[in-house]
Amino acid sequence: VQLVESGGGLVQPEGSLRLSCTASGRIFSIDIMAWYRQAPGSQRELVALITSGGSPNYADSVKGRFTISRDNAKKMVYLQMNSLKPEDTAVYYCYAGAVQTDVAVGDYWGKGTPVTVSS
Image (tube, rainbow, N blue to C red; front, side, top):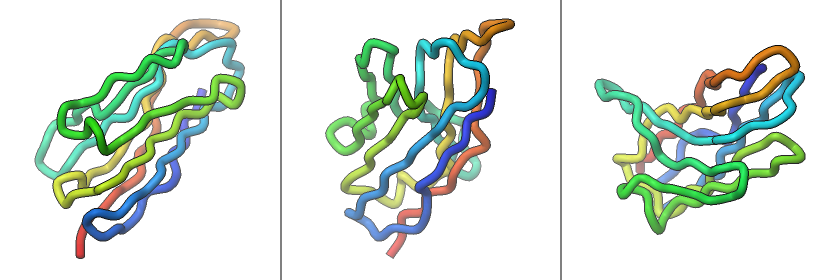
């Protein structure tokens, strides 16, 4: 199973970005999909998650600004980020939890995509 993120980059404060993550491999189902982020010198933190049924949860710091969504058929998860702030600067990681394949159930991480919010 591989997770590949895209969509990161440099954006000005109050700007927007949309992150995408694609899961590939012999996947039968994915329970949880989520976005985490890690800023320099900080621990990795949960930004948002979404269940297979489409129920989202958000970190307090991004509520009202970020929206997580997923396409189960395409095995993709998205993060629409609006009203970006400099403190949103981090490497954003895609996470897939309880991924059922033809041989096992496991959790997986992408390699991350950097987001820099700066004028």
